[in-house]
Image 1 (cartoon, rainbow, N blue to C red):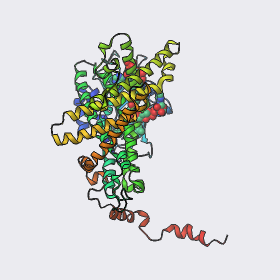
Image 2: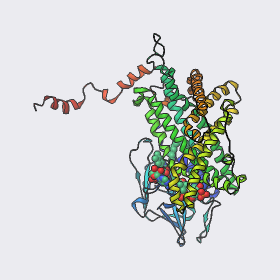
Image 3: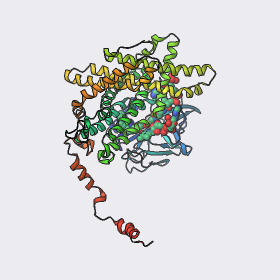
Image 4: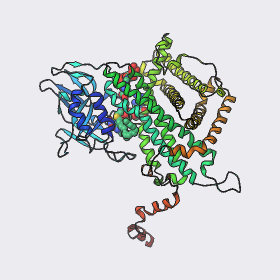
Length: 558
Ligand SMILES: CC/C=C\C/C=C\C/C=C\C/C=C\CCCCC(=O)SCCNC(=O)CCNC(=O)[C@H](O)C(C)(C)COP(=O)(O)OP(=O)(O)OC[C@H]1O[C@@H](n2cnc3c(N)ncnc32)[C@H](O)[C@@H]1OP(=O)(O)O
Ligand SMILES: Cc1cc2nc3c(=O)[nH]c(=O)nc-3n(C[C@H](O)[C@H](O)[C@H](O)COP(=O)(O)OP(=O)(O)OC[C@H]3O[C@@H](n4cnc5c(N)ncnc54)[C@H](O)[C@@H]3O)c2cc1C
């Protein structure tokens, strides 16, 4: 859970080679990387810039006389900073640097760079490398810094699957300007399942513990109740169980789309890139944010013991919440999706609705109202309505500011909170749609019934959560919202008997969870005592600090 020094080798270094190195280059490098003869990382972010990639300061200048690139970090803010596995473990890196050929700045490109000697592991001349120090979490990963002092690499170390520099310095452009960002798109495509998994771990702990913990009464005179029987506890946990499933289903779809993209790009078809970039930008932002919220609720649902490291939930939170920042800061990524949504609105306004992709086609179709009692399809229409409403509102605000003479960037900034709201609603619609489709495809009728209950819980919870949007233009009435609330409470109670099975079905072992509270056997109290007794402070009855500090203080006559 705390991460692994080789995580980035598998998650980004190898995928970057697969997606961006030519077949010829990969004959040399990929097999060695897969056999872990070389260990790599993905070095893009710098001390001064992470979000704004166009302003990366590390340069790779082509020297035609030697057919080499010269890598250089001209100032302190140009140092690579943050890459996982860079500090101590990696001897190679995929380095993203601004490429300069014949004095022309050609933007960020990826290079394979050797950092350390393959035998001694010592850093090579011209390279400064080290660890950036302790972090909120993920402390088993050596996130690092890296500087280059006019460090030379062969021309052929530019990853050349999509763009090339010929020996004479002729530049061959890629089929899509952002194709070098594919390693990021890959991780974003995988993040919904990864985050769903973090949320699932925290929920497994909280739900299991909530059936062990007894506190208070629902009806007087009875035995104290399991805290999971309180409606508030169910409301805290069960919608997140639904989300963990929903995120996993959405993630399966984006992983499949990424694989499809890779194949299509190899045949020169880059049409999926913009769609997948927009989709995964929104999805990673919503999923990481809601996962962090869900994990924190799971911790609080365990009361005081949730705050102990014995729960292990704080560690899960620390790791998961990193996802809000890495692979694109969430606001920045929501604004990427917003660009796509605004463009879609502009297309509709220009009478080109027919050209809209399937995920945004709903933006052109107005619905007057819904009959929620008819079922999940009507909820989908309601989600479409609020997303459409907010997308149009935010877009109109931006376009009006533009028309009034504001510069594009200023108009964008002044509309950005509204735009991020639109992106979130659009993404939540996508999550609900994929959840619905995935449940419809389940063959086993008993499994389908339980998942359908979760789906119903999800759509009612979500609609209530975004109710202000739906009430704003009178699309939903307050009596319809009362119906949604009643449905929500109905499904909380219906799910209660299956709650433990739902979390057990994720099949985390005790070793994976590392939680005293979430033990499969439920022996929480004995093990909490054993865990406390094993604390380093309990190794001796009297600590050395007693002689050193406490006694002089207690015996002082002052
Ligand atoms: C497999 C993983 C599994 C699970 C994960 C779960 C567990 C985790 C376990 C271990 C992992 C641990 C740590 C994770 C590692 C984290 C690694 C990193 O963080 S790597 C660094 C990531 N950095 C970023 O994400 C930077 C964010 N910034 C950007 O992406 C860009 O700067 C930008 C904001 C997109 C802007 O780019 P740029 O300035 O170049 O763009 P322009 O403004 O010029 O043009 C915008 C134009 O381009 C389109 N576009 C941008 N990006 C893409 C893309 N990737 N694909 C397609 N199109 C793209 C954009 O839509 C605009 O188009 P337009 O509107 O103009 O048509
Ligand atoms: C755990 C972890 C692992 C990482 N691993 C790697 C790795 O392996 N390789 C690697 O290269 N990098 C890695 N990173 C770096 C990470 O990708 C960046 O930190 C991330 O992309 C955010 O960029 P930033 O730090 O520049 O944030 P900033 O952009 O400085 O963000 C600061 C604030 O400014 C806001 N902001 C910035 N730009 C805009 C804008 N245009 N509009 C509106 N608001 C804006 C943000 O929303 C945020 O609130 C890692 C980071 C972490 C935390």
